[in-house]
Image (cartoon, rainbow, N blue to C red; front, side, top):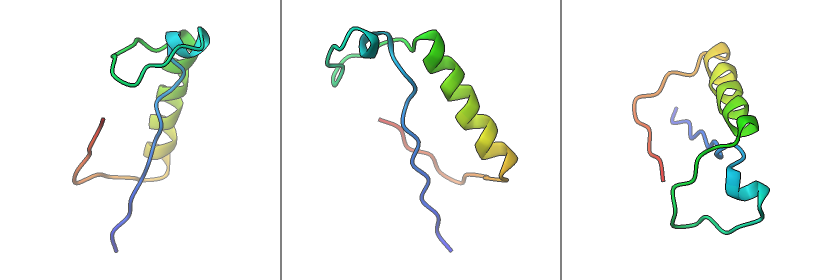
Length: 56
């Protein structure tokens, strides 16, 4: 069975400033880094193993 897992990025510095970030690479805020680590932890604890990963 094919599974599709979608994970949104964590909070960015520009999110805090209510700026549009569609075409610019912006660093994550401290909270965003925590959110990204938490997403990884949850995926790992639930046994997800990926054959392919795409990012944008």
